[in-house]
Amino acid sequence: ITVSSSGCDSNNWSMNLVTVPSTATVVPQLYHGKVELINDEVCLAVFQKTKSFDLTPLKIQSQNKIQVDIDGWNTPIIYSY
Image (cartoon, rainbow, N blue to C red):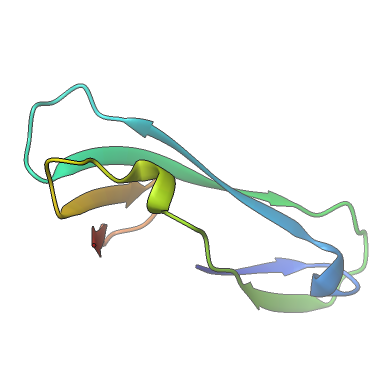
């Protein structure tokens, strides 16, 4: 996931992916997610940062893929395993 924000140094940022399973019964399993950017810097320069998240805790034993809809994104992520 790549985000842009103002700050002094993107290496000082923290990012989290927060997901909840959908209540809809669909295959593949659907999760709703949000990317949390923790940026306490007050500089005005704009940086971009890419972060990978481990989705293995979202695996479902009876399926081989899941869908994650990230809040604010137009395209869902399909995680095949």
